[in-house]
Picture (cartoon, each protein chain N blue to C red):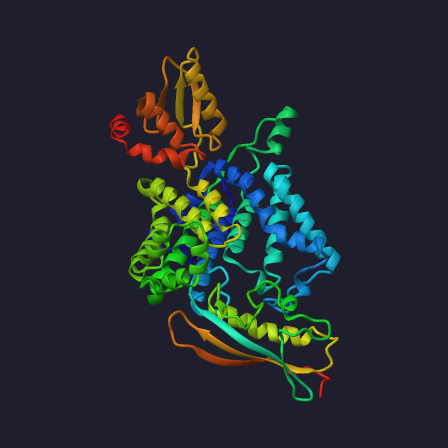
Length: 374
Length: 148
């Protein structure tokens, strides 16, 4: 067979070419840099019970454990405990962005090693954490919001390009959607779940705790009602599937992020899920469009109130959404060139900052803001 | 210009991760522990078990009673196996919980060297899968070497 005949057909080459372009496209790593900062404390929370046990002289193999595979290496006790503390130190360095590549690789390697030591270590939130750490270990996420970048500046070296091939970001987006999609799909396919039996039985099993909790009697009565749970089950399944799908399209992304935050907060309030809620909310930052400073915030520097807003935006703009420029009045120029003034401009600005977005996003639906954005 | 090897490497890594993740999700429908399958709050199933030690002379002693300096609750760690006689929720599903119980019986049998009496451990398990009728199963650990 000649080389010419061995080549794939033009259509396949075209698809592969577009796929390769998508994976290799240089995009901003800002969201992964922010995620890196946020993940540090989450990893420490994850490590806390292991470290507490180690301080008390206990490790996993002092009680029932079950290796996934007989060949999986187990370390001497002192080395294992040392690794846990090394992971804690690496996590702090990861969050600070100090020797970021080394810190991210070490954190990922140790947390993953610990997870795979025993089936008893496995929880969905820990698996998700390992996935996030794997992506942070392969992505150049230390070029911004990091001590590494600060040290470069101090040495007078030019900053490194904050853009990099997009594939780690796309992979993490896929994994993020997979978490919600797999969970929603498993409930959709289970007649006991979708029909409401599982959630109804769970709240009935927890009725004593509900009665003792802060909820009023009528709320407990609704929650333990079979018909209510039959409907609520559908809502839960649709919520998870909506988040999984809605995150992919710009038209539904903000709604999906908003719903996802409520979803995680309600899970946190009703179940023991270790770090799942904080991790799930933190990972949502990766759905920001991977380009930076492509919106403009103009403020009148002579107006004290506008200067305060400028300070708020500058301090909270962790995803680097805005270029801040002096102007004659408060206005925001959106990515598509739309110019907003006054309150609608503020609402738009606040809806693009990670800390205020959840509160400001619903305000985008107000008629005044919608008119201004047309 | 990106080297061809880098381009192909990226493609392979991304496709491998996607295929692997989808594989884990599918496998989650048949495996006990469902790693990386992300099936959250899967069941309302509950279970309880009478776990006993059967000694060489035929006595059947509940594990709630400490023996040879061992306590069941300390031996089984934090995987939902403490106080097995009390009916409780199977957090990650019945298959997961009962797989832990089966393995824990073996682990306890093999990791209690001061115990020179017990031949094996036995659990009589009653489980309720969601709203299904109860099901009774008996699990036994491996017979301990050297105890007759």
